[in-house]
Image 1 (cartoon, one colour):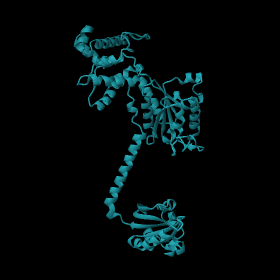
Image 2: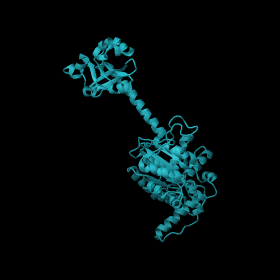
Image 3: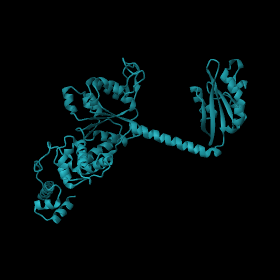
Image 4: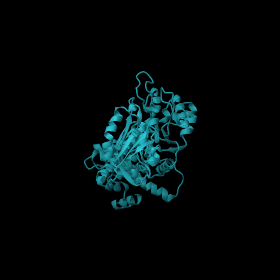
Length: 470
């Protein structure tokens, strides 16, 4: 025992306690071992030596414990001074249940650690171990899901709805961005779906399991932006928290940082943002230390950054740093062909919240097409939600239901024609016929019998023409 604990004059109470209990532990265990503060083996009993397949116990003395037992956590116990009371260790295709404890001298200094193999055959414990592992896996999955919910994404590329050429081009560029580690600049009016697209890019990228952190620059006062982005060191200013407060860069480390309305960022912060992107490091407010960060930046704005550069309100070097891949997102009025599928997707989502199934008629979609949509998809959702809330119990939205909630300002004349290039006569006539049918349906509030009368054709002919148009 002296070789295990050293001279009695150097032993403290803890050592004496371990020495008193040691014979009982050793007798009850399938093996025992001790290491010094450098995690070198100072003692090992014969049963553990046989378990490990050692020919001579003396050969192990003085060796680093991981040379003899590669998967041991004894160095961790020596380093932290904390016990590992129950642990499953694998050695040479064996699974061992091990308890490890540190021990100290009279001055409270760590002397080393001891370990006991409680079980060298897990067969009797298989049900318990299996249950433990299942619970551990469930806990890990729950933590991962919670982290993803807290700092993750809700949207994928399928949530950017649309099949028009403009929408398909947006999706093509988004897939290109997702497959490459490059900054992305999303350009579009408010309500066009910039954050949906940013989350979608993150979701299908290699960083999908890492945080997605979004920050709306326009919503934060200028004097708080630096702290919000780069964090605050303890006691950085009067009233500051005594603990370190992490900024958005640190929260997004390893993942994606989404800068919404980046055009509203003040010039002084633009310079610091540029440095963080170029150097891959930040300096928290009130700190003299730099912190390395690894973030993929997706920026978005509804402003014309090139005009702002000309005015001197946006740095050209930051613009070129952010605009490696540009994705313009068209306003809703420029992709009215997507109105039908957008309404279906939005009504399904709205219906889940209101516990009602909503549908929209062809005439209802035509009524929506007569509006300019300055608020884009966000405004479309608002209109549909109001229509569904105010509508009848059936949840079917026709033109009349839409007109009741559609703002009057911004409605375009359906008969207004824009100059078009000369095209084949058949195509022009087909489009004129389709427009006439659309106008008749709107005028008849979706009643196809009345629409047919307005057009001077039979109802069966109208149905045939609608089938060809669908």
